[in-house]
Length: 438
Image 1 (cartoon, rainbow, N blue to C red):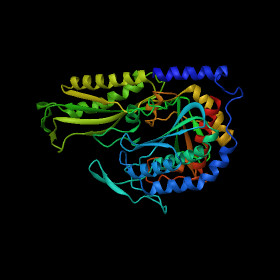
Image 2 (image 1 turned 90 degrees about the vertical axis):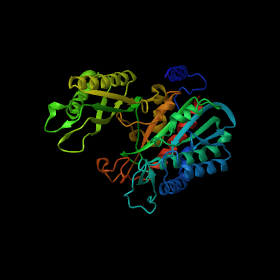
Image 3 (image 1 turned 60 degrees about the vertical axis):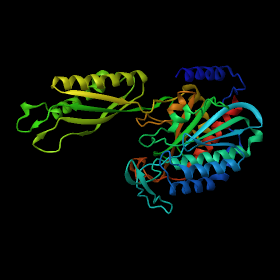
Image 4 (image 1 turned 90 degrees about the horizontal axis):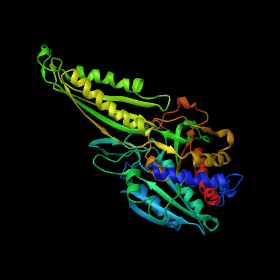
């Protein structure tokens, strides 16, 4: 995080002093952005439908990666494939010197069977963690790829007027790599996507969502999306006949007490006026018969936080509570916490700079402050390295109330494709405004 804070401070100094070519009146977008994006709208929608009909799970996005790489090569970009398994990284150099901006789109689908009646609905099935599953772009990553393909074409046509460089990052496995594999943004960062030349100064990303209507844009500076960690607790007792519980140690009773005890972490240990947090047990398994007390119970759950200190505090308390309550029941508890995605933190200074750009694209009345989301995003790994700004594009039909729209990850998730144009305009506008003003 230190690098992110230092970069953010430097950016703040530039904006406050008007240095390095920053326009005193604030960022403005080139007049051609909207027209150029509109001319590409049909192609963006066609790409999206093609990708939607042929979804691929994390680290298996071979067809999508080939489609992306072939398109970028035709545009004359410097293209690298096979990054973090199936990722594609491309560089577009403007005719004039300037800063480097990174743009990211995630490519993977989900193990969900589509239930939307569309002519291009997914019929794909595959094996995931040993089970046959349907595959669907139920989170909208197909739109992210299509939008960024369109932005690449728009910017490539304007490279003679462009001062600076754009690094396009098409990332696999945002939803998580298959069991036993590494992947996603964390692996891309480790493989040098942000540290290899050209090194980006900032990164932009977006996500479509059903919680807003098409044409609407939202954002949140600072902690925007939660970290996501998984815990596992194995409570070990001593097996006995259900008719003679005193002859053994019942791990089910101990585990039940642990579930209740874990609820006190958020209600009694966490400073909730500072940041929210969630501790949830999602599954508990033990025993096979009504008259046998088992020797162990296993439970798994999730921890969501918006603050690094609170995250560490909760990890400690989960272990203390589980082991302490187990001991009080004469049992033992083995606790493990697997770190997931970090907190997604939108650089506050970059966010303040970006909002006027979004307002020029969508209209001031269509841009709003988003609430904190307990969903997690591995875009956070990029934001740990350089200032980043991640925002949201609505894709629900304006005729449908958002509380009636199927959520992301649902088999009924449906995209109003008019929202894709706003996404392409926004990403292109942010890129060009940043390059021109820095």
